[in-house]
Length: 421
Ligand SMILES: *Cc1c(COP(=O)(O)O)cnc(C)c1O
Image 1 (cartoon, rainbow, N blue to C red):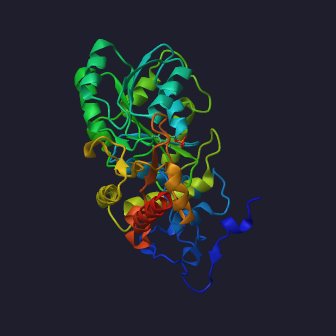
Image 2: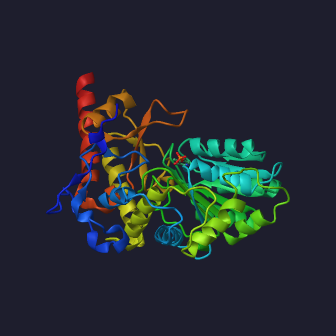
């Protein structure tokens, strides 16, 4: 039975008792109530590629007293979230959709609103999550072709060009960071190829594991849809599907010839709601996750107006990623991505050294209070594990999270080797 204690808040009426410094001065008043009295319960360090560690401010915002989703106060917070979501993607034109659900709901939204049954979609497949997106598209009646990358590689742009020349596609989908392999695909380059070879084709990006940890210039790069979720780089508890659509994608949706093939995921229902909230007034189709929206608001505030700029945030993700990868390889682990040019900055996937199994390392890390993720890609599942380095663990280096991870990787390997010897 889960104990109450495990989510008990520590309160102090006199002083900030947080063991870690927080940047309170950067927060807007709406999430400022009594926050100096709040700090989260000690817990294991969560460094899987999502959900990730969240800040005290975000967790406290999630504990906001119950609010009506129709209240003007909440409508303003929702409106801010819509505007700030655009800012994280350097977008002025995109239309955000913030809907209760996980990242997976983004695939359903794309499949149901943009692709009509019988139309063709090209999936650029760099691992597990591309397989799943293809599966989802097929459920809604799309005809799916795939360009596949080798394990640890990104798709070859020449292959993409050839596929686009051979057939007309309504959409191309690409996974920005494939969370099963930590492979980063240059969505800027993919979008450029699509624009050149098949300009009418919409470019759809699965950015669940990249938004807010990788730089994304939505308007400049000509992205038509990016879909993500609250619990990865966006540093918020799970439960919010975040999607941004270009004016062109919205137009494609508006001019479809057959009705949308989803009820809950229909943009026909959600577009007016998003437009209403953006005017800081409330609208209703289905109840939004009110508390989570407060939490998301707190996180976006920290991402955009916190101790470091958005540019600096991305730079820190690159530096920390580099450090984790270099240190891990020095110890004898080997990265899954086939080259530095296809390696993600918000996570690392590591093969364990010859003669060892992930089960020699992962449980040892857990004993040290460090939670990493096992393998996910079916072809290499028994040989590697995954570490996330996104969000506050990267941006607030005074926490020491990354030092702890690197030390844990070393100690766990030493122990495993000593046991085998
Ligand atoms: C996590 C993830 C998903 C699925 O998101 P959920 O929130 O688990 O539904 C999809 N794509 C990628 C790349 C992911 O990392």
